[in-house]
Length: 146
Image 1: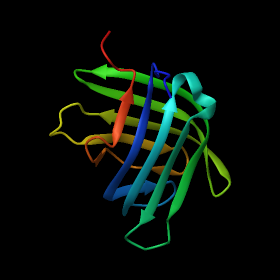
Image 2: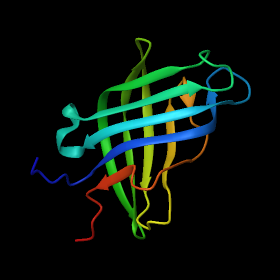
Image 3: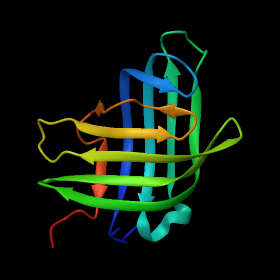
C-alpha cells in the first residue's frame, strides 16, 4: 500500500449481547454486532464501512446489514494515548438510505478493550451506548503525536 493515511480507521470487530434500539420500537433488543471498516480521509470515495446486526432475542426478526454508500467525513481526535475516530455519511439498509454516525475508540493499552463508542443510523437504529470489542480490532490511523 505505502500511503500513510493522515486520519482514518480500520475495523474488524465483533460485540456480543448488546441491547440496541430500533426507531419506533419500545425497549431494546439484544443481539450481536459485527463492524467492518476501512476508512481514510484522503480516499473517502474508496472507503468502506458496514454494520451487521444479528437479533439473538427473536432470531431473524430484526437482522439487518447496513452498508455505507457515501462517507462524507472522518475526524480523528487524540484523547490521552487513545484515539477517537468519528465517521459520518449515508448508507443503505434493505435499499433505504439513512444518515449515520459511527464513533470508534482505539485504546492503546493492551489490557484495555477497544470500544465502538456509538453507532447511530438516524431514523432507524441506535447501538444504544458503548460496545466493547476485542483489543486490536479497531486500529485508528493518523492519531500519532507529531
